[in-house]
Image 1: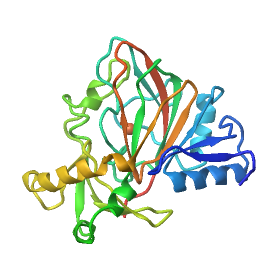
Image 2: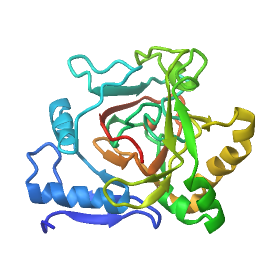
Image 3: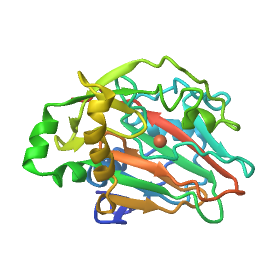
Length: 280
Ligand SMILES: [Fe+2]
C-alpha cells in the first residue's frame, strides 16, 4: 500500500475513510489497488474534501472499476449522461433513495457500485446509512441459510418508478420518467461476491417483489423477516456528509438509505454508477 494512503474503519460492520487520496488526480496503479482493496475489505469507503473532483474526473475514477451506467429512468447531467444529479431543494418533501435498497437490482446486471460526490450538503441531516449484507447472511442459522441458498427472487423497478412510486416522485429537481411496465429479473437470494467469493443476502425492500415461482402473498412473510433482519443495527454504519466528500459503496453486498431529515435545506449530490455483472 502506498504510504500516503491510510484506511480508517468507521464502524465494526463496514465502512472506512480513506485518507491521502486525491480522486481528481491520475491515480497510480498502486494507489488504485489500495483503494480497490479497501472497497473489498470495508464494502463502503469514504473520501473527504474532494473539492476539485470535476464531472470528468468523477467519471474517470469510476471507469477504473468498470463501464459506467446511464440510468434507465433518471436523466443525467447536461453533457454527462452517466452522472445523476441528485438534488433536493428546500421546498421539496420527498428525497431520492429514502428507503433501504441496493442500487439498480431491478436490471439484469445490477450496478457494481455507486460513487456519490457531495456538492452541497445541509448544515445538519441528510446522512446516509449502509448495511453489510454479507454480515446479515453470516448471522443467520444454518437451517435458514440452507433454505435461502436455493431461492431466487424477482426484482423490478415497477413499484419505485411507477407514477406512485417514491423514486419517481422525488423528481421536482430531477428529470425522472415513470414506468408502469418495468421488466422483471430473477436474482439469487444468496449472492456470491464475484471478487471475494463471500456469500451475502441479495434482496431489498425497494425492488424485490416476491420469490420466483411463489405468489406475493406466499413471499411476504419471509421477505418481511429478511428486510427486517438485513437492516439490523449491528450490520450498519452511518456517514455524515461534508461538502466535497465522496462515498463509494459495493452495491453487490451493501444496502443504503438516504435519510430525509433536512427539510427546508438544500442537498446536491452527483452520482456515477459502475456497471456490474449478473448475480450468481
Ligand atoms: Fe441508492
